[in-house]
Length: 557
RNA sequence: GCGCCCAUAGCUCAAAUGGAGAGAGCGUUGGACUACGAAUCCAAAGGUUGCAGGUUCGACUCCUGCUGGGCGCACCA
Image (tube, rainbow, N blue to C red; front, side):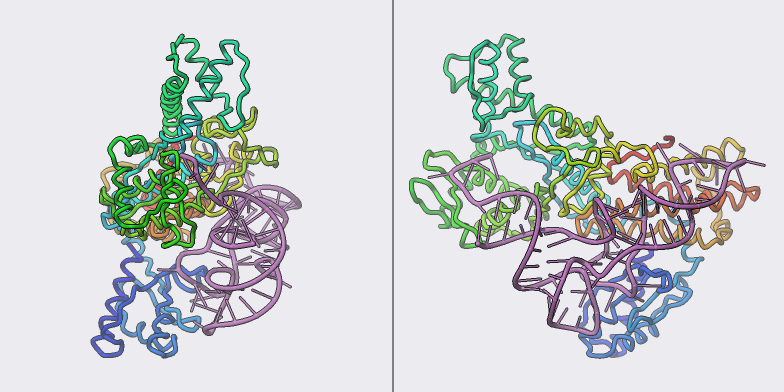
């Protein structure tokens, strides 16, 4: 609410300058406002003069001065300055900051959330792990990321649908069925050579055992058995996956099955659509798609010579179907090992005349688990923490989610299990949660010690009381609270939830410092009330921020 | 061989669509609890941002070429 206000004022100044003929009338720009690293450079600043300098071919500091002279910010800024060769810096008035704090306290955070999305409809697809095995830690990172992103976008004006795409068709299902089939044979005493390429995980044995215990009778025909077993196993595994996700705090609005795309004729329809467009040819008994026409990629097979369709084919159908559902933006969160697949899909969209710019693919890099300072094997071996379930059991949902969101997505993540488990100051999750719990504690104490706290609920308090906040630290805190909105805006715009993580650590830190130097509960009850408004608002920001990350804000720890 | 991603303090990482003297946490050293929770705070030390060029008023950020690491290059999904 501060940044937008400054933007408005700058625009007003530029309109004025246009009227006077000092700026070209057709000039259009977004004033880019940032918060300088150095306190001396003001609370906010803009590099607009540098940008205009190129267009107007005049020195930036001249332009800065010109804008400065036409700014009407008397009421909100103590002063403005031109510095660093052309930066325009804004120094906010304490009284304005207190006005803002007061509104925020009265009306709550939600009234001031930046509207980045403007109601845009977004389909956010993430995790989409194949129902052939349990979720592992890598999926956990995708889940934490996707879910946090969905919450972030919802808060900033997007209309978000979370979707999980279930690959329950194709060869892998057959392989899963066969894996169970062989384990069943094993259980009934037969000797089997279990092939390398099948699913060797323990969970397959468990499913087989379950079927054995229930004395399930299979048809004579092996291929029939495999079909039945595949369907049973994948549904069973999908159930487990959903359970794991729910325990991780991740809920989907929609589960889309690959098999339904075949069932509804979407795959066939898409195939003939491509055929009509003429981007398809036959070679060696297979049907090929001219990927190379659109992207720097090789041509790919859509229908194999045995008549089976490839994964690529149903995936094209899936994305076409997504476009037809009428979203403004599609976001796919994929493991980085799928990066080679991106041009292929984009090529398909181009071929179908769909706007590939509407599809954003976010690649999530791998996770390495560290235990005792050494990497833990990521294969499904015994005793290694590879599944998401094991991770959550080990370190808890909050720590896991927070840790996953401490890196930008395109960087590898080292997950230190021992650190995540520590309930000490070394662990950033607790650092932030502790700040929240501490404020709760202050407010509890206030009640216990007979301070008046009703105003926190009924908001019956006068603006004047905030004038008692005179410490520099207090004004710093207020500014920091308002950076919450700037952070959300930047995070949403760039699809980077990790920015919020760092902001929260920062905000918590500023509070802890304040806490150690300044008592909230004072003899002076008016001052106490003013400080309670400050810390209560700060607490709301912490809670809201943690909530977006999917982490609890505990009242006690 | 071709392509994508990464490289920042001893370690793990930030740096806000190219902005002002590159910041945190951990670890190290030294300090702060008879007042709201010490899961906290304060201070110090720690850097040629992998290397070499280029673009720019300005580069960790963009471009080119190297080096090192991860991943991908199926009629698998």
